[in-house]
Image (cartoon, rainbow, N blue to C red; front, side):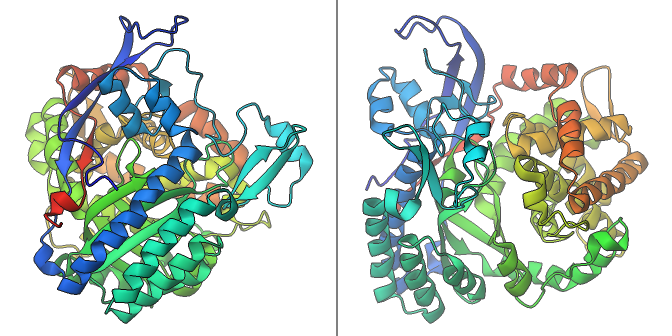
Length: 542
């Protein structure tokens, strides 16, 4: 296993137009995507010697998720990388897990590369939705299967644990080795169950064991998890891994918010039928971590800074969820990206409201908001996820963003949040839109960003000054937050897919004025995101 996935350097890569010529004549380009390197480290004194001994096994298992995600996102990694002569472009392909720039609406950056299929490599690239849906395959909506064609060209599904048997047996073996020497009994049980789950695609027991862990300092999230990579249907999950070290001091500060979840649910700005479910506070957790390894989906393009798991809605209702804030990665984005953006796009007399505490809290309550609202439609259309289909992820991310800010407003007004002024959270939130929308408007998070930005603009929640800076209008922002929260919660409860599609088409896009302002950030060489130097050697472990 390579000890470091990426070398330490600043990457500034030209993203080129697709040309008819097969050579790498890249005299024309469309945009520049920039990443700034960041070392993933932590205070190893927080770990026992036994936990340090476990780390090499966890790193080895996690690294295998990179190869599995490559297959799901693109296909043959080796042949693609071997075909790229330019070392910077080859490194850029590694960051993006394929030949499409994830921070530029998945635009191809190599010659003679087609547009990225909406279904990535989960489905044959020549498959039509009509062809797939007419077959009515038993595993049509499978979370853990790939769709392929047989020799006669007919579609069929194959489970992950069969398609990736060799790699999963290797990853499973590493987890078992970690479990064998693990002294923490809860972590040991989880590692054993996760090892088994990788080979069966049955993750229920391991998810329950994971959510039941309370006292562990060392943690690993590993396996097929999120649905974002399947932009065709939002059915299939992508492989990823995080290795985490809990910051127990920060986590303890966050515990007080868990007991407020039922109250926050009842106070949602929507009719009672849209908030009839009750959050489970007994098992709900809100923790802060240093992340020391990313692999697969979470490491592709823009880097995740908070995680809300498990995704299984039955487990969420019965056992709760864990909202994990990745503090060191979050601080890197705040220092190296958000603050420089604010110096250009936020009105000078509001820049003092840009704080890390507000950035952390906005991100944290985004994750809390995922657990509020309802999972089932109110009109018999089934689950919200099922009713909204491929539009679900973008609307759910939009809900979490704006509802999180609504909750901060409520808690701040009740003096249940002591730190800072409410204006800190609003201005930092606006600056955060400029940061995250640079990831592009094609992803679920990108559409959510633009839906929110354009709604706020229409409601006069902010003003764009003649000098190209933006200022929050406090009262209008407060009203807009409440209004958009109510609108999204109702759309989810109604399972109104047609209305969501219409809303995303009209407002889930980057409009001309904003694009010009975002271009100013690129001209100022402000990085779009971070790329990690990570591995055992970075931690100082042999």
